[in-house]
Length: 91
Image (cartoon, rainbow, N blue to C red):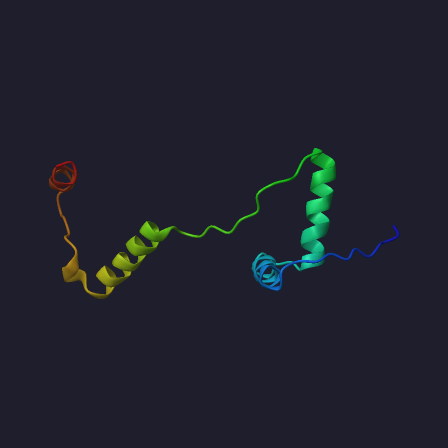
């Protein structure tokens, strides 16, 4: 299959951010644009959502809190009775 060069203009910062994203997803810009074009042609629409699972601020805070609790177990409460735990959780 013959290939063709495509030239396009893009904001430099956007290009840098896109290169970092697609690199983290294991590809380069050429691969990204090729798979995007193939899927658009196959589906006859502007295609798909490829994303990295990035936690929101609340989830990041919860992850940090658990990390702190692991380092200092006295920060959290522990239970030996599941009924007691559920009663307190549902209050």
